[in-house]
Length: 169
Image (cartoon, rainbow, N blue to C red; front, top):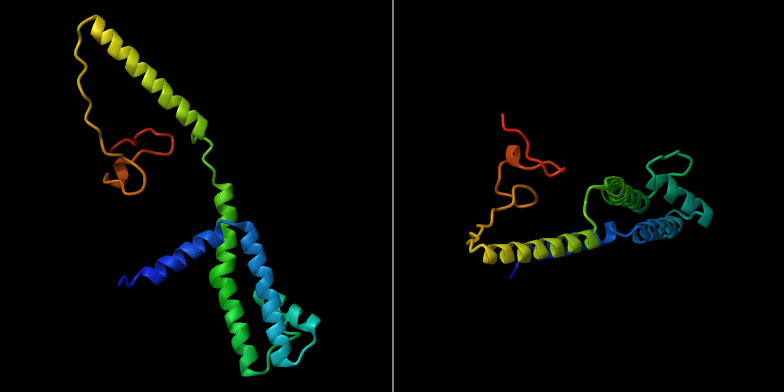
């Protein structure tokens, strides 16, 4: 039995949740409506007041014009604030921040495929030239990557985003 399985499912759910702006906005609106309905029932408020309370509480503004008086209402407020502050707002922020941080130097899929095809053609040409002049082409030993996730290289030897190695000091 895998003890970490529930955490992996939660993580996968959060990744799915965070990568969809539609899901984020829908869940935010759903939380406001559900919290408003529950608050209206628990605190005996009108629907308009309850939704206003949910929006103000979820945004952590807290004007103080409407506040819970029962323990159930206060518990609901604590859950709504905690969920917004610890989950929804960071996910929305991370989503939009990830859209702003774009590597313009990254190759598109078509460019990668073209590069692979070009390298393959160059390899064939090199082999043809080697056959003509009776030259033996040595086999290259694959090198481990020097950057990226799981790299064995120490941080000071990893390449920068432009692909050049940093100078060792």
